[in-house]
Length: 388
Image (cartoon, rainbow, N blue to C red; front, side, top):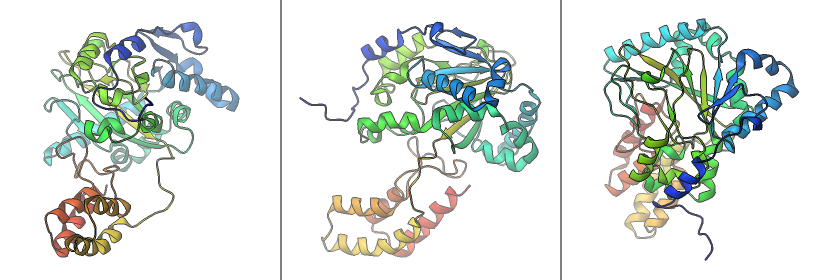
């Protein structure tokens, strides 16, 4: 029987995971790595930085990074990504001020994959740093090493976003997971996407962590399971208890120094570790970089479309001229059906990993028989809280 092209809750078996993660990376397969620890290649950017100045040599290094992230172990460490850590310290001071202000104002971001408590999160730390300290932003993100590793995986014109995570002593580990896009969807939603889109999801973003302090193992640096990005049904599998247990038993951690950067395929099974140190406030800026190709061809005013369409849908629904599947299809053609990008400070996830979408709001208000005026007020409030 031919493959139906979809994954389900049982996809990505433990046997597949065990076989793939039993691989060992041969250091001889890498031309530019300074070494390999626990299946993770380490690149000494102090020595390799001059390679970024010539197009041909830069491309050769990026090609190796792309292989590591895709077909290799799925993770790499760039040692001394910041030759001068002064921009790190300057950004840290700005982020600490932002955290203090947001906590005083009653904010403080929730963590998608860890229990609340000892963690502080700054959503959209990219924009907030730029507005807080534009010169500091320029010195911090004006880093050719970061630019090159992002281009290695995503090509040119990529979009940078970032979220600061500060884990104090006693902060507990995250659960094992994959990341954005499909890693931020429930299992039910992820199962609706065909298998080839599961593969595409991992090619659309790149995950990274810039160390803002020294991170010995006791501080809980990211737990990683090399080669786990190769499990085809992994966006379904990581949610199962036996897979989570395998991750806990086999994941590796590497200490990082301030100014190091860790980058990995978003499909790699990973999780922040327990901070069992006595006095280390583990701060990392988690960069999440997106392909330029994750956009529609035309700019569409979907809010205007929704306002115009709502009374027609109410009428067609009441007259029985549009059944439930047809109603869903019409909403899908007009309304924004994806939760991101959004302002996670004001539009946090509700009952899952993602906020309510415009399409979800429209379906909900139609099902509830809301008036046009009530719908438009709800839509306006939804739009307002998504604006950064």
